[in-house]
Structures are given as structure tokens and as C-alpha cells.
Image 1: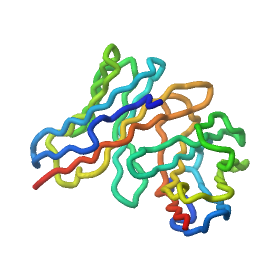
Image 2 (image 1 turned 180 degrees about the vertical axis):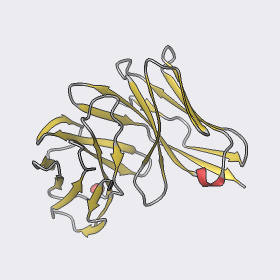
Image 3 (image 1 turned 90 degrees about the vertical axis):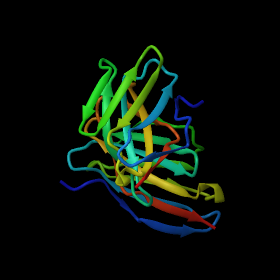
Length: 114
Length: 113
């Protein structure tokens, strides 16, 4: 079955703009989580959605938001972009999101803010 | 607050030898641990996992060991191959009624031919 699909793969934005990233989870998976990866920082948890509800949230400012649709697809939005937001944004899906559920990642969306 | 720590940013190993990647965690509530492998410009791929009720899980050349009393886990790769060269992330999870997987900063493994 198809894996986690993220679009766009690469994008360049200028400071102050906003960006929306999209994620389609593995078919049948209902939990979608988002991570930010920057050099030397590992994978920082942004938030997790299940059945269109945000269940968990990481320590990111309110400029970072997300949502999930009834088909489990998810979007992540970053408003008022800052240079420090340049990173690889990864989406991951799992069946139910409970412990013991392995999460599977997409290829990521590379965001560069100039 | 780093709940999952990978203290070695890089590791270099000769082909055919054993690679041992280490990970420490601080939260005793974690009950599921995973290792992911990541190549440049790709998303992380799941490698192997272990539940807190076990102390060892093996899958081919990959074995994960869990020492709950020490809050330590390790990934052993035997024998190491050049294709194993990648960044390895350790991760820990607990069911909070939601799902939150915490990742370490990663260890870059170089396997020399």
C-alpha cells in the first residue's frame, strides 16, 4: 500500500509569509503527527491529530498550527515565517496512535525561508 | 528538556564489525521504544522496536536491547555494511490517551569498506 505522502517536497518562502504543508497518511491510518527537523536538533514534535482532533502538542509557538480532515489527511500551517523556521517538516502516520503503534514517515517537505 | 538522549553524534565502524548505537531516556513512563534510520533527503524509516516488557528484540542483523533500570537502550548491527551508513534516531513513546513519540538528536553512523 502507498506510504505517507507529503506535498510540496521543496519550497522557498520569504519572511513574514505563511505556508501550508499537506500530508496524506497511509490508507487506514487515523493518527497523523508532524515533526520539525533542523540540523543537530533531531526531530522535534509539533502536534498529533486523530479523528480530526488535536490530541497532543509540542512546544512550538502559536504560529504553527494544523488540522486534520475526515479522510485523515492533514495540513500544517506556519504563519509569519521567520528565518529559523527553515527546516525539514516531516509527517508521520500510525494506525491508532497508541503506544505500540509504529509511526511511518513521509519524505518530508523542505522549507527554506529567505 | 531532553527526554531522549543520544550522546554520540557520530560513530565510525569498519565493515563486517559490530556497530553499537546507544540511547538514554529520562521518563520512566515510556513503554515503547523504536529505532529509525534516515538517509539524506529522505524521511526516517522504521527499523526495529521494543516494548518495555521485553529486554531484547532481534530482526536479522539488527538487535535492540533495553535496560529499564538504567533507562538505556542500544541498537546492535552485526555485521555492519556500508549501506548502513546513515543517521539513526532513537525514539520513545507512551500512550497518553494520545500519541507522542519523542526522538533523540540522532547518531550518524559511518561504515567504512
